[in-house]
Amino acid sequence: MSMSVLRRNALCFAFCLLAFFSACSTMPRNTGRKLGESPVLSFEYVFAPLRDDAELDLDTTPRGNEPAPHLRRAWVLLQRKRPQEAIDASALVLYGSEAPSPSAEAFARYIRAEAFNAMGQPQDGAYDRTRARELSLDERLRHRIDDMTPVARPKLAANAGSPAPARMSDARPRTEWNPSATIRSRLDPMGDIYRITVHHSAILLRSQTPAAAASQLRSIQKTHMQTEGCGDIGYHFLIDPAGRVWQGRELRFQGAHARGDNNVGNIGICVLGNFIRGREGQRPTAEELAALERLIASLSAEFDVKRDQVFCHSDLVNTQCPGAYLKNEVDRIARELPSPRSAVNRRGAAAE
Image 1 (cartoon, helix red, strand yellow):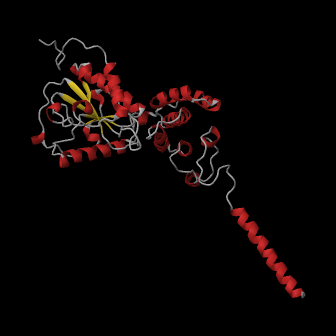
Image 2 (cartoon, rainbow, N blue to C red):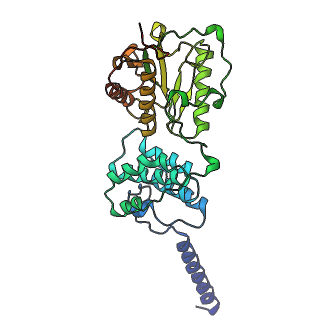
Image 3 (cartoon, rainbow, N blue to C red):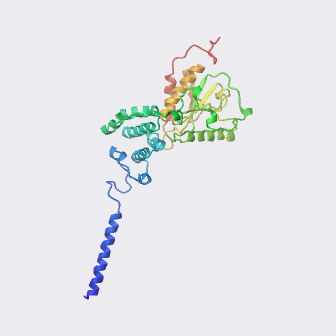
């Protein structure tokens, strides 16, 4: 064989080796998971060190229905100083169509508590911190929870984005969700109040931002006024996933939420979310339930509403509203109301 042929073959062999090693250097490293396999929920996975590139860190976080990728993404968002997005990502685990495992809930609650802490709202994450400590089986996670140091809310942001106390007088005013003007000719006076009915919006809502809640309120009002011929939004109060209470229709006007005469003397409360069982539904948040309980207690005390006059929409008409996940909670809240006081009228004077 001539030298020129040998030289050419050697050169080709060298090029092949170079191409092979170049290809190997660009192949993904072994992550311990098969291609397409969901990551396993663990302390090491959720709290793994972050990369220098924030967007690359988020882009390479797997997406799926399993809790592990949602929790990893929530932790990355929190470390990237995006606490509200971390809360939203955690909500996909806590309030999805299926109840989370105790381990998944513990991780999600801890991340939420840290996110509220980062926003200067540690009191809003107090329940999450306590619940995470109760559920956690991982000693390292328990140490993280015990080492949390609440950050005081900055004075200049005392009320920014935080849930309002769930009392009737403290509901966020209508001006905060920018409703359309009412049509007074379609509104009836309320009269004496003696009952309360709870509904759900039947629309999935996982975001806890005030803007998302306000947008949904405007959408509900538009449907009630343009499709159903109402003079305003049909509910008197609405509660969002963060536990904020919003003023809907003024209490001096009868609601349009329970059909026909069922609206007489009836305060309508709508909890934002879709609380039917199954793939299309979600569970009410702990904040929504706490706000609902306080609001019903406040209204029942103000208007002397008896325990047996606190209803779900499905108690009055044939409907799934407010969904099985919420109905059980409403029934519990009604049972646990304080014993009825002596009859008083709306002005607080003894009834004749």
